[in-house]
Length: 116
Image 1 (spheres, rainbow, N blue to C red):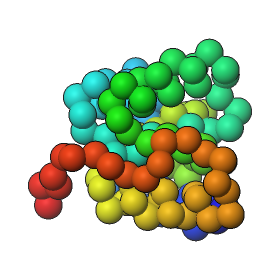
Image 2: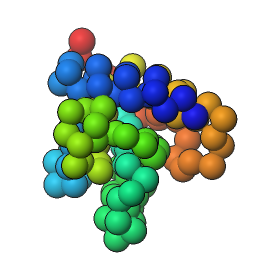
Image 3: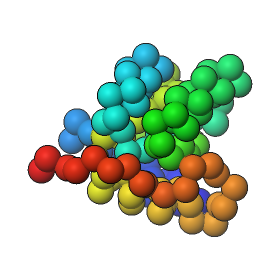
């Protein structure tokens, strides 16, 4: 896993306004079908992780763990983030998958078209 590169790209996505963070905002974004990738910090509680993974599965959005995610987006306490732009999401999946085939959810498969 190329964690430093993934954190750098995630920070860039956050500065571009393409990351929503926090449980409530993340679940709402998943429900509205505006998410392309869901991320959690490995230290998230098991109960929160289970709830969030269920929402990801229902929305058909891939989920990955991203160590240092909160720090990367400038909100160190956050354990959940959702990427709302396809290009950022695809590259993050690639970076987080390098050398790590045990994560869940496959690649970015969302049907939403980008408005950019």
